Length: 341
Image (tube, rainbow, N blue to C red; front, side, top):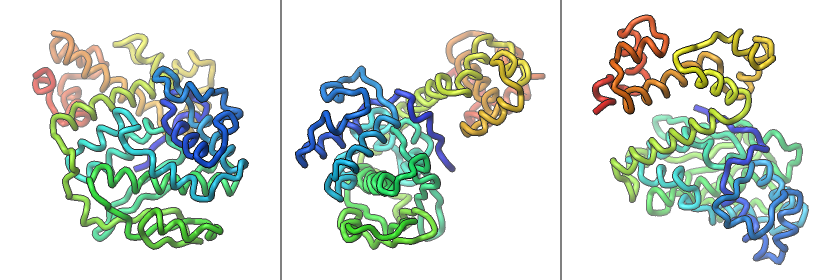
């Protein structure tokens, strides 16, 4: 399962990754103002809780690091410094999950909350589980920047799994789709596993025997509460970003009225074909958005109003209550009574 990434210039993330990189560069004698050149950020803003930054701004700092001839192991140092506690609700949700398998699943599900510079996927096999990075920061034509981003991403995965497991938990091997760089020997030192270059794709491989292990901070209630919070944060991001966000806002603007794709396209001054193509480029579809809007409204109505199940079903545009109950089961695994508690 892949994670989608919001537009690179969308300022919706706390600057913790930028701060960590600027700190590492400062330890090498590189002034923060040089590290931040071109980002429209000041050094004193990096620890301001109200400041939001974008993936694009972080990529600019990475480009600056490369052009300023930073130490070759800089991305590894940054990745080792970025513990899950820096990631807010996303990080705490991962640390409290009930198994390492849940950790891997939730890492993908909520990856959009983590200032994502690459897309991630994970696949479980009988003897191993594999992280893959299908785009490997394809928006950058620079080989140096691409390698910088991948090195940091791999180191973050190793650091985060140790945070969750409460012990060293190195991969069994790491594969890279590019030729070995001059500092290739440092890869194994940081990642703690054999590293292979010129491979078909970028992969980080773990022994599947670890997947049923319990994280050190596993807690059922805390996990449920934090995952619910992350679901809301994901929902807020979806309803405020890109073309998909505009569609969400139109559909949510008149609860109980679900205009068709043609009508929504007209409201956005687009052709239906263009709307379909732009939604596809953002990793979604009109049908998926309508389904998600119905799910969000159903949960809101059931938890906060006294409307009957029949009324909720009618308001959400279902032909009958039985269809609504089936949809609710598909969305949540629960019936109306269970959701109302």
